[in-house]
Image (cartoon, rainbow, N blue to C red; front, side):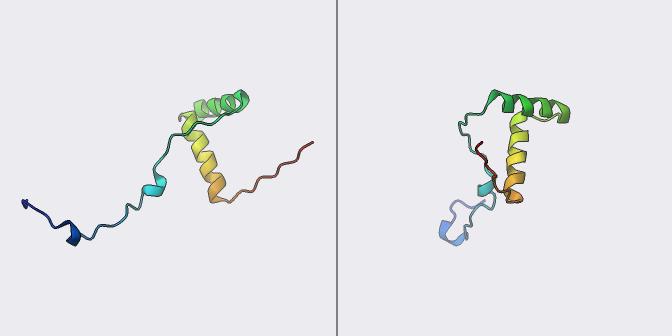
Length: 71
């Protein structure tokens, strides 16, 4: 191992996984929604927060549009 490295010649590049790093946020969800995903998570054997993330990721990938009707 060298004693010193020339950082400028290492050709640093951006981390390709920076967009996939999870960030912790606070979100208010109805109890009914949380209970639904908790029940589903028990059926699939994965944590409910992971299940919510997978569902939202699927919405993003399929570019699902919201359809809100106020009645």
